[in-house]
Length: 153
Image (cartoon, rainbow, N blue to C red; front, side):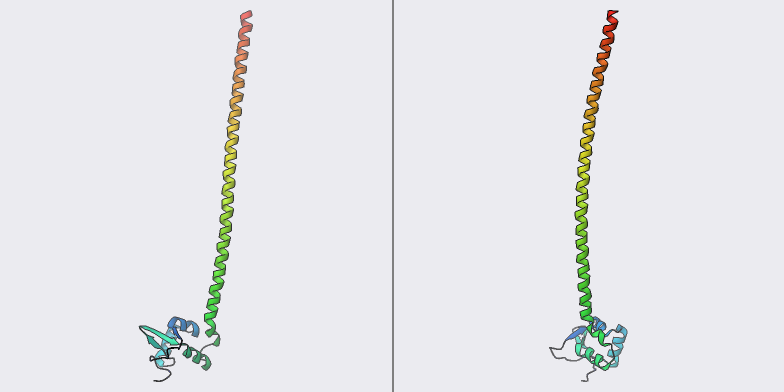
């Protein structure tokens, strides 16, 4: 069996990558990978129904200059990007938490203002009622005075 065969037995401890992982590591298209597999330029292993690419093959292609060396570090770069995205997401959650707290404070303030306005309206109504009562008493007193004045005449 040659080093470039499409399938075959590998050592148990040999690291295998899925096709998607190999594409990321190699920085090539799916079409190119399958073309290289067909040409025997890269070795693969069938695990069940899945085709796996030995990490050693990717390292070999890197050494041969067939792929850019930087592509092999794409996994750590992807994890770093995922970690960065996680931090951004956490920051957004914290910002949202702060917004929720501010919104709750505003809701409480609006409730307090509403209660204060209701209290003032009650007080104004009481004040008007008292004023109307005084005006009514004054009217009755004026009418009584007129009646007394007219009665004496």
